[in-house]
Image (cartoon, rainbow, N blue to C red; front, side, top):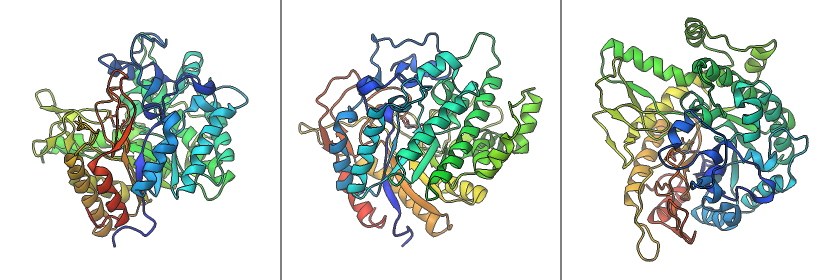
Amino acid sequence: MPFKKDFLWGGATAANQCEGGFDQDGRGLANVDLVPHGKDRWPISLGEMKHLEFDDEHFYPAKNAIDMYHHWREDLALFAEMGFKTYRLSLAWTRIFPNGDETKPNEAGLKFYEDIFKECHRLGIEPLVTITHFDCPVYLIKNYGGWRNRKMLDFYEKLVRTIFTRYKGLVKYWLTFNEINVLLHAPFMGAGIVFDEGENHDEVIYHAAHHELLASAIATKIGHEIDENNMIGCMLAAGDFYPYDCKPENVLKAQKVNRDNLFFIDVQSRGKYPNYLLKELERKDIQLPIEEGDLEILDENTVDFVSFSYYSSRTAKAHEENADKSAGNIFDSVANPYLSASEWGWQIDPVGLRITMNTLYDRYQKPLFIVENGLGAKDVPDENGYVEDDYRIAYMAEHISEMKKAVELDGVDLLGYTSWGCIDLVSASSGEMSKRYGFIYVDRDDFGNGSLKRTPKKSFKWYQQVIASNGENL
Ligand code: BGP
């Protein structure tokens, strides 16, 4: 049997993409609440935010989403019916500290998650908690400039102390920042960054990166102090870059772009800034805002495991000017002529999952956890709301089969697998509902219409028997 007996099968969501209830019980506004769906969404997430107001004329997906805020018991029951061993969810920072800098947390917010964790345990589901998933209080953005400011360390430290203490014994697996490398590609989503006119973007981004890396190490330290059983992980938007061909310049380019993203995990997992990054920053004349003691904190508090999302591999070419492009999770790449693509142009590469797992395991020698993988598709339900999503079953079966080879044939140590958007939710990149990943269909459209009724899809039963057979029956 390739997978361990206690292998953590499950699914993943993020607060802002499923909870809704944006103004319930004292919740404050977060960056993600300001990002409308539609054509403005991407520039905003790139940091080109012109204003920081909540504009009700747009449909803001985080506003109501699939209203898990009021449906979570029903949703957890469905996850339990599928046999989930784990459920990955994120905390909305602004439910717990509505502005981010209060001295006392908001009890209603803390209680909301406590109830969820207790119910998870009652159902035999181990919670896996992302502390921040594209989530930064608007108040901290307006008053401190988001993660560009070192003061964010104090606010984050307060948040993690509060949650590690309150949820001691209820939560064991934690992720510090969702897809930490996203801050390079979408700084508003990743770090609450809004650029000023004429600013050196790279400098702001690497300063924010240093602060998030330190915050992650501090969280790891505090998490271990409060409960030695805590397992704290980092999280990468992964997918190896392949060289377009064996032309040495293309191979070198692939190595470079892989490192651009991996440097975060190098710091979180190995405890040191790699030389290749330090040299690059030197060339760019960027000084990291390192203060006394920072490097020791990074060195002494490395993560317990490495988690990542995988949707596709990517491809790199030294001169990309005339190359075909393919869309992808957070960033585009050169199109790989050997791969087909989803309706959104994301290329499909199950073997790439095995390759990526091997890259990460060779490099870090720490247990891995696949915390996102899945197919975004336009599901068409029948009159009863039932979806025959054979395409999703095929995608997942092929990926799980490659994941199995990485474990069985290559010896990769893998803790678990949580598919992305196990229940339909709002898409992070487009803000649409119609890009669905779930095993459970939710009756809600791109404009906020629909009964919110939950209906298991064909993939629901399929995943149920995948879990029941510990990955044998695909
Ligand atoms: C990752 C995010 C998720 C999720 C997923 C799918 O980058 O961590 O929040 O949404 O991608 O992307 P999308 O929703 O854009 O299809």
